[in-house]
Length: 436
Image 1 (tube, rainbow, N blue to C red):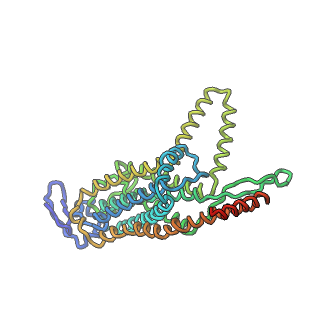
Image 2 (tube, rainbow, N blue to C red; image 1 turned 90 degrees about the vertical axis):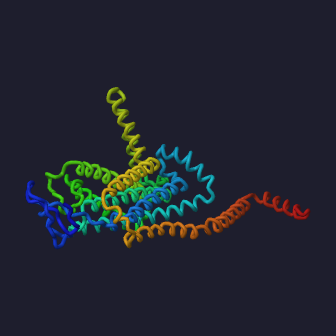
Image 3 (spheres, helix red, strand yellow; image 1 turned 135 degrees about the vertical axis):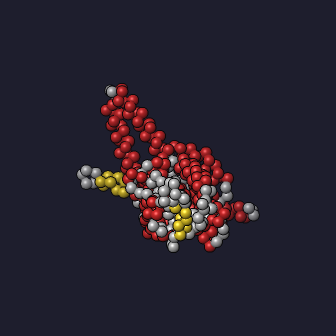
């Protein structure tokens, strides 16, 4: 027996015939009907969540984020003060530097890709928060199925990957903008000893703190969505309203629960890692930590030099820790890792979506067209950044370089001895007489 979308298929007992129960308001019926003797209603298409336009917008914007971040890191001059990773050193020396030397106006292009990356990053952040907030609103109202809630959660997770990837551009830019200052050191006697070069803390604008706050909100909503869908029957009842899925500690098992644990580990590790990376660039505490770590390493090796077994264990742990640090703090491996996660999310999301009413959800409406048209924003940002900076790189900079070169020549000429200057002036006079 097949019931329509305004009815529930029910059966009083295993031997009784099935029948269709009319429900006055199918969007907010009592969940007790499902748990007693009725099945979930037929799913209704929701193109604003699982439509082809929404999926295309999320996938294309994430792909553009990866491309713009990758090209920015390729063309941006390296931050010499920050780069300590031999993996990135090799990547910069053999790939990035070679490419920058063969691309005209590489610095201009890197600036354009940087602006484009930040536009895409903000877009991913805002759309991720919006789709999760809307999903939880529908969840509380009982009008969203477990299937559509899963789609919204996967799209938000996809946006999270793209947003975290874009933070590589900010991390690199902060390292490039870091400047140094000179600080007078005082000896034990209270006398001025010498001048010491130290890193200056980068001033953080309000918009950066606002982005950081939105990033925390996004992470909290994504964690809540992950554990809302962690119950055992979540994948078995995709047509049911999400709020009707049985909950409780006894239901935390099976595949959804294991996926929730893995997702939690990824979110905590990635967000914590990027927070530490950005905090290191803003606060400038990395050099002090490295100095203390090197001092501890020398002390530990001197203590263990007479104990071969402990020394070998310490050396093994030390090498593993250094290798992990180089891998975890490497821009090159981070780009590859995030690209693989985005590919996996795209394949998994498309497979999950293929189970339900694809024909109805592919209808192009308001919720489908708007996200696709919003993809023009990063392109407009790129064009605006190019035309806004092209004149500076093509006209102002050559003029400035010419003026600076002339000024340097005059200063060098004025610093020469008097006899040398007079000899130079006489030679110029003779050359002018002969028309040279």
